[in-house]
Image (cartoon, rainbow, N blue to C red; front, side, top):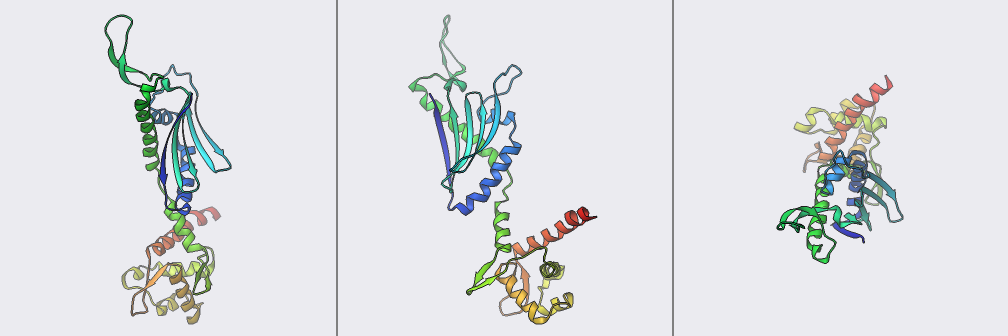
Length: 261
């Protein structure tokens, strides 16, 4: 007899779940230890334990699946139809789980102790509560994992081409000399206080003509790196723009330069 209990989290679109699921799957494979698998399923690892505990990553036609198994029971995570994150606990032996219930003894009166779940229809309510608790513990573990999916979406918005007024606008290339110089110029602390104008950039980017700087500013506005103050020609970095310029500087100083030294 096999029993399954699933908890579904429904997302608005596949574009929201896909990067999040990729991050959760990677972290679940790398970070979940045997002690945590036992905790998800409400058990403890003892020195006398002689049962198999492990995790498995599998690829199916429908997608990928992360499965953590402990003896006859398992808990798994997979995406369903691209917009549902499913956590599912499965067992082939309900007596694997223990709960407090009335225990009859051959001698003496009955007592209320921690005992294995009985294989009867009357245990269904208790079994549902136990399996639901397993799913909830696994979801609590997932909720503690850092979510970088917003960063993935922001990177796509900044680097992929956009169509604005029937024209294709090129995204940012962090290794392009012009884009690199523009982002470094926009990182000037004055930008966050008084904003920046084309005339200010001309002093910092003497190799670019005024017309080219104007086109670059329009491009950066279209992809969401900068925004213009209404009624003026001053520009400020957006939240995504500040993150992009800070990331460029950090990657250059801490990764690229040391790696090439």
